[in-house]
Amino acid sequence: MAIIRWDPFRVAVLRNTLFGADTESPLTTANFIPAVDIYEDEKKVVLKLEVPGLEEKDLNVSVEKNTLTVKGERKFEKEEKEENFHRIERRYGSFYRAFTLPTTVDTESVAASYNAGVLKVELIKKPEAQPKQIKVNVEKQAA
Image (tube, rainbow, N blue to C red; front, side):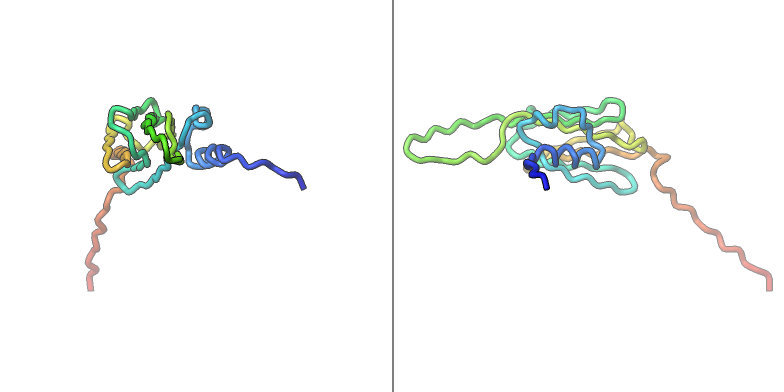
């Protein structure tokens, strides 16, 4: 049995391949990869990305053709401590996420909001992709 070295970035690339993200992106060179939740209902598709510590000016959301791209950068906050050793576990630097959008999404109707460290991107579905309620008429039978 061969010993295989663990590479956490390989898992991230595999995860993005499974969920329709662009693997030809600089994902593997990013300093951190924000977690994302993706869900949909009959009217829209919603993405929520965890990006705490960023300001609105540090985020860039764009749609080109059928690809949603989210870029950003978390800048390092320099703390100077002379006596105490401290540990830095939070990730800093740039990130890049790209998602292939389904054809049911209207790329002209995209809204993004940022609150409490979560970037929320809402993509409205095209009217023809939304479910339609059809009323069933019951005919009365003659006795």
